[in-house]
Image (cartoon, rainbow, N blue to C red; front, side):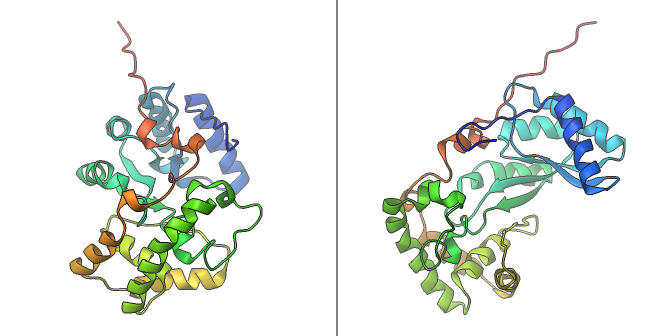
Length: 252
């Protein structure tokens, strides 16, 4: 899967082969939570989830997840087999799912797993007070390009002021904010450093009232954020473009 050419395969055959190959590599009998990470818009979601349902019935998968799925796709998938978790980008500067996806997940009883809850490391100071590694995806990320980054600096320093008020770091405030969005929300910040892991765990100690949450939310409006949330290639396979064809009925 290249950065400019994202290939997605949601056929039942590919779903099964990926799962079984993963089990072999992991040396496990089953996978707890198995996601379809992007939606194949050429295959009815019922066919993809139908195969995942078989894997659940065979004991190879315990729970099914979706990532970057549209509202229609989530609803149709859930009708085939209960979806346990939906993984979406959600952070202080990426809030689009709040309008439709979050309410839908709560209507259906689906857990929400925000990825990039620190804005690809932005709220940890990446590219502002820490450098970006030469091989990092951030070097082509629209929000980290020179002009956009310069404009987005203001957001970081505003969050920094609020973090001081709450006795934590900007990253901990950003994580604390997402953790306070509901008991059904389980963010997955990524890091390769133990010190960052420890700091992320420290975000559980950040206590925020409804007034605090509004104050933090109001610092950033979507119009103020410079640059798209990811590259064009990944935008085009994101949840806003993730409806699938209707499944054809089999005539008797």
